[in-house]
Structures are given as C-alpha cells and as structure tokens.
Amino acid sequence: MAQSNLFSLAGKKGLVVGIANDQSIAWGCAKAFHQMGAELAITYLNEKADRFVRPLAEEVKSSIYVPLDLLKEGELEAVFAQIKEKWGRLDFLVHAVAFAAREDLHGRLVDSSAKGFSLAMDISCHSFVRMAKLAEPLMDKGGSLVTLSKLTYYGSQKVVLNYGLMGPVKAALESVTKYMAAELGQKKIRVNAISAGAIATRAASGISGFSDLQKNYAEKSPYPELSSQDDVGALAAYLVSDVAKTVTGGIHYVDAGFNVVAP
Image (cartoon, rainbow, N blue to C red):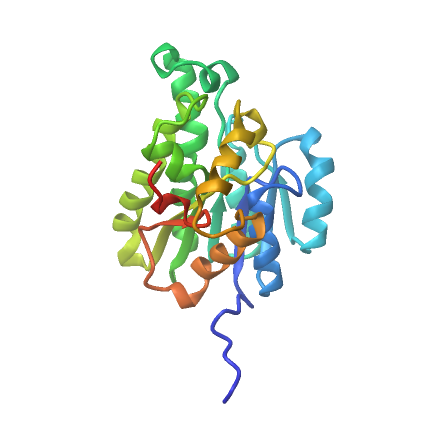
C-alpha cells in the first residue's frame, strides 16, 4: 500500500500568534506545524519577549518574525501586510492570546470595571475576529482559523474560582468561533477552537490556585495522564490540514476527557 500524505502540511503557510516561551501552548502548535512541513510566520509581543521567542522562531525556521502588540494601533495590520508582500496568501492562523488585568482576573466579576472588561474582551476575543477579517482576503482558496484557549471549557461553561471575568470572555470566544465558521464557510475558511486542559504555562501561573485545579484534573480525568502542549499541537496540525477540510465550528477538547466527568 502506498504511504499516505494526508497529514502533510508541506507547502502550507501559517501564522502563529501567542508564543511567549517554550512552555506556551502556541509553541506546541508551531513545532507540530514545522515537523509536518509548514512554513511559519511568528509574532512576539515586545523586546522583553523577543529573547524568549526568537530562539524558538529560529528553531522552526520561521521566515517571517515580527512584533505584535494588539494594543498598538496598526501593528496587526502590519503583520498581515508583510505576509501579503512575502507570501501573497495565508493557509492557516493560530490565535493564542488572552489578557485580563490582575484585579479583574482575581476579583469578582460584579466588581470588574467597564474598562477592564472591555480590555479583556478586546485582547482575548475580538482580536480573533480582527485577525479573521485580515486573513479572509489572503485565503481566497480556503483556509483554517484556530483559536487556542486554556481552560476554555472549564472557564466558559463552569464557574472557576479566581478566574474572574475571563470565564465570560472565554464563553464569548467560543460563540465567536461558531459565528465566524458560519459566515466564512462558503469561502471554505474553517474556524475551530481548541479547549485545552490544565496545562502549566506562564499565563496559568497568574490564576490563583492553579496547582489545585491541575490536581483536580489529574484525579478526575478518565485518561491517566494530563494533556501537554504537544498534544494540543497534534490536534491543531490536524485541524489546519486538508484532512479536516469539513471540520468547522467546533470546540475540540484536549483535556484527557475531563470535560465529560461530573464535577
């Protein structure tokens, strides 16, 4: 039997937004994409982040490496302008960014300010919409948009202590995924979200009591092993591949089955 090349990403060009260091979920995705032959564009937040992200970008031979602070006007547009100039198209993108001010993340939702709520929604949710709009004209032959969100399931559908306003924001992100899948489907642009389990990342360290949450995952998950960045990367690679050409609008769990277990 001839060897199947169904899962190859050779010839595909993708953008990965949200790598902070080698513990990032987005890094697990970038590694998988590279191993399967994709050419990557990678962004970094600022000069402070550059020293952590640049070696990773070099490891996967990223051909586009640019700064991206979503709060700086014009930077997102500049990323896509460079992709258009260098590649002329985009096959997939991964959105893996989230932010909430510490007082809003650790405080009660009812105490959150309008400014803090809007900021969390803009960075963590609406930025995915902005990226989709910029990606659309570069995906004239179809493409795949994936958002990665730690604790999406747990925080959007269940109340997580010390998660503050991020729960409602994650719920909005899941809804955005479904609506954009419906709107972009006729152009063969697929939109999916990956709901990762309790994976230790820099962002997770900002959640009070995260170690207890991780312990709860380990004790209750059907599968006796916690999910890793590489596990998420494997699913992301599938979702952006041609094998998943009719998979869209889904919230896909990589959490060792925790989402099916009663609290």
